[in-house]
Length: 113
Image 1 (cartoon, rainbow, N blue to C red):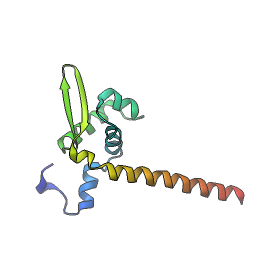
Image 2: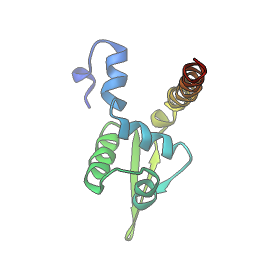
Image 3: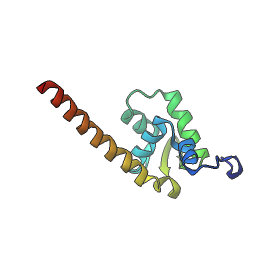
Image 4: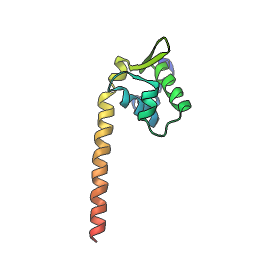
């Protein structure tokens, strides 16, 4: 993506880069290190090969990850700017964990009534 085509609002920029749930999940997976296509697909239940391929290409085009091919082996690794998303992904993880606890508390309270 070219700088001149980016939205003015920084939040909109972030959403345009990682707003898709599959992109966030791919980045989350790659925060653990370099992965092959098949490893990413196996860890992301429900993603099709076509969607995974498209999202990897978009993330590569945006400079979030890079693709390295050696012979028949293709691996994906986050770039420095991709790794800089770690705090964002960690905050998503923490919020999701807290929200699940909140929902469990609500369910428990409803069941006591």
